[in-house]
Amino acid sequence: MSANSQPVIDAIQGAVGLYSLQEAAYYARIPENTLRYWFLGRGDYQPVRTPSVDREGIPYLSFQDFIESLAIRFLRVEKKVQMKEIRDSILRAQDEHGIEYPFSDRRHKLAIDKVDRSLHIYINREGDPFKLAGSNIGQRGIQKILEPYMNDLLFDDEDFLARQYRAYTSGGRNVIMNPRFLFGQPKVENSPYSARALWESYIAEGGIDYVCDYYDVSRSVVELSCEYCQHVGIAA
Image 1 (cartoon, rainbow, N blue to C red):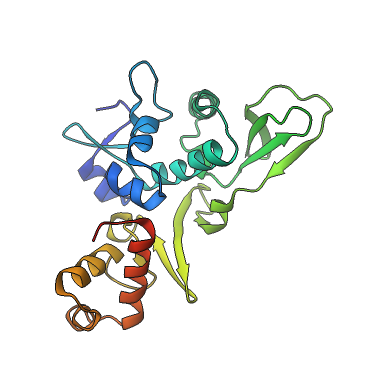
Image 2: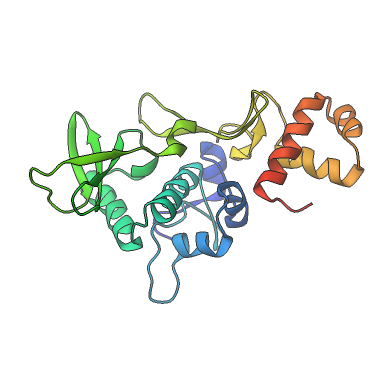
């Protein structure tokens, strides 16, 4: 178990969310092998960050780990940032500034150097912005980068960390992930059941009407749950 990991029972009692690497890969729409590489490393390559939860040697991601994976995906896929730069920025935030999850902290900002297109990562703590990654840019201009996933997050007013993620929207209704409910499993907003539970029941029983009657939920909840699970590629 990593020195920074906590047992599963602590994760459950602390309502921090709980995801296997396979689940997190589905929900983040990241290949599982890629997610494993980011969080567990491979050969001589160190992980970008380590999983927060451990169960008898099996790693699990917390909700904050999951949100960080969305940020890492954005930086790698959209901005082509090198893994070492991402890893170093996380380690600096943790070791020098005591910020465990810099990319799920609403105070962080990304900017691109207009001259050499290098990435700069900033975070504003107690009104004092400091740089986590990026060379000195002197008087050259920088351009703020918009991070689309941030628009789908709700943040805590006290610790500034993400507390809810809007994973999917259709027909004016949302599928959300919130570590206080169902260990952070995706669910239609205001539904007491996970989207996956309703989807698997639909597959097993072969009909929406049965699921509606058995779980006492509306047809729209079942339909959106099934739509979401198909969207992220959960196997039927």
